[in-house]
Amino acid sequence: MSKSPEQLRVLVLGANGRLGRALTRIYAPRHEVIGWTRQQLNLTKTSAIPDLLRKAEFDLLINAAGLTSVDQCETDTEIARLTNLEAPHLMAKACAERGARFIHVSTDYVFAGDGDDDHLLTEDDTPAPLNEYGRTKLAGEQAVLAACPSALVARVSWLFGPDKKSFPDTVIEDALCKPVVLAVNDKWSCPTYSDDLAQWIETLFVQHPETSGIIHLCNTGHASWQEYGERALEIAEELGLPLQAKKVTGHSMHGFEKFKAIRPPFTAMSTARFTAITGVTPRHWEDAIRQHLVRQFGPPD
Image 1: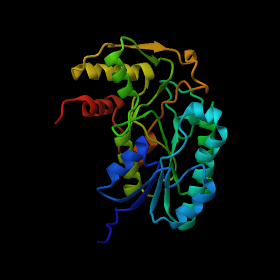
Image 2 (image 1 turned 120 degrees about the vertical axis):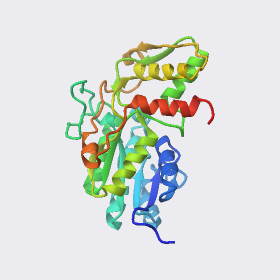
Image 3 (image 1 turned 90 degrees about the horizontal axis):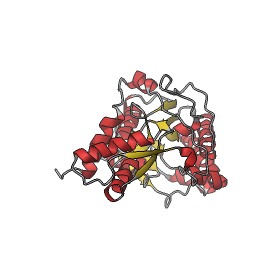
Image 4 (image 1 turned 90 degrees about the vertical axis):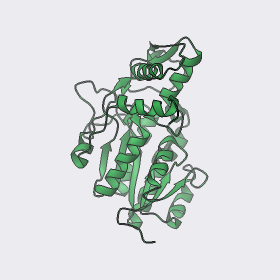
């Protein structure tokens, strides 16, 4: 059976991660999707990447893989460099050589965190990462676009979704068995629903395939980790869950001794470019988290 013009062969790297699982699940009914985990492509084995991609059949490569542990990047700097910089650079070169499309997933941590309520960070704002995670991701962005100018770099933030436990799920599980739940109250960004993100990316590669460069993709609205957690508990209480803790106690991120890396305080991003291109305005994160939590903790259909 021949493919429709909108149906693509999509190779998803990082297929076992939260976003990778959402991409493969949501695209499977409409596209020919191949999901690779580290078993098929290990980002630290960079010498093998060109040949592996040369042998693979795909129209579009989406890189949802990388070393995303902020503190591990700070200590395992060589692994961070290989996975967040060298591997994406090789992917971009492979896509440029064969004329395939490439979408690379990046992060709000490329910024220093000096945005505020009156200025959501745009694609034109100057990155200034504070930690090794942000530095390697920024270098990866630059290497990707230098090797493949037609590539699209999607900066995302604070992913949650049904395929893998995430922050709101953990907050609720803690509140079910603990009288006190802690979360950072001096760091703000935009929670992003992985299912929404997968759909926005598909809108771009199907309806606006000429889009390239950097684009910010997240749900609208922003919150601190404490506010994010408290909204999750409010919804959980509405769902009738027997919570021991009904509030989230705020805690400065500077008081978390386990943090090895400096975190940027305010990295909420504007999605105005995405809306200008597609006509789509991402829904508010509170609407998305309600859908997610009803799906996870609500009564069965």
